[in-house]
Image (cartoon, rainbow, N blue to C red; front, side):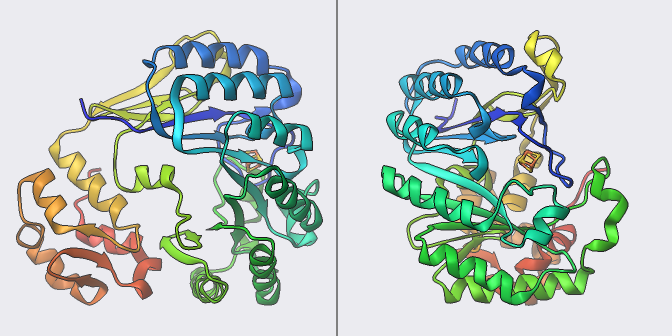
Length: 367
Ligand code: SF4
């Protein structure tokens, strides 16, 4: 078995539900937290005690947990797995109180990802995130830094027709002034089973999205945030080590509602039904053993999301063949979009935005 270095833990509770969100989550007011955590600890117990390099608690909104539950979860995880390089948690500014920041610090959390999405009150209202605002985000960044946690990511969304370039730039400028180390920017995806699905025309068309992405890329660079993955930008030395585990197609543990793990080439997906999860009943809803062809497909699909691409030597070692020979025909048609050196292959920076269509031409998707 390969050494696994990472663990993902899912906390599916949110104080209110955003209009675009399709993640596995339930309202905190349903009071399922204690029962859920009991089942989560049971699942975590099934993993042997060991030192991991990265732990990532995502959601949902992990910072919405009650203080005693947050403390028990963090101390359990640190005691058992350490997270020696990166112990990360997602937080919403409105639920990240000073007391909770103290709990994070006391339990060795060293990276916090804040969900801001926008500093525009008009946009926050469309997203049903009116509890949050620019001043609150700034106040939480300052409180985190004051506690000694300075590895901070801020998440933003772009793509609404009403957004203004000046406001998008202002958000990034403020983050830089406040010492934020990492910014994730995602284009707003309207999922079928979300309230925004019926207002799809509030989102820019493909050309508009593409222009905005290009603009953001330039502005982020102007403020020192270098892109290292399609939607992720950081100051030097602050790339997310945990997320690099996924993009480099390495194996990882995962626990909690809707979470997917990859262990011994088996990709296991957990239920999104919280009542099944709480009863530890039918927890694994899909378990697929990846063959060599699947691993190669995933390796290319994920590594090509990275600005640095992949190393030809690594590909050769993993799959026992030469990429440039095996993909000679495909690359003949795609060569203008890729940068190929004697050691690596990557998508040219200006084409990273059309990565999905390049992958369709490069890889053989199964139906
Ligand atoms: S976007 Fe985040 S905070 Fe909003 S409902 Fe989804 S998981 Fe909860």
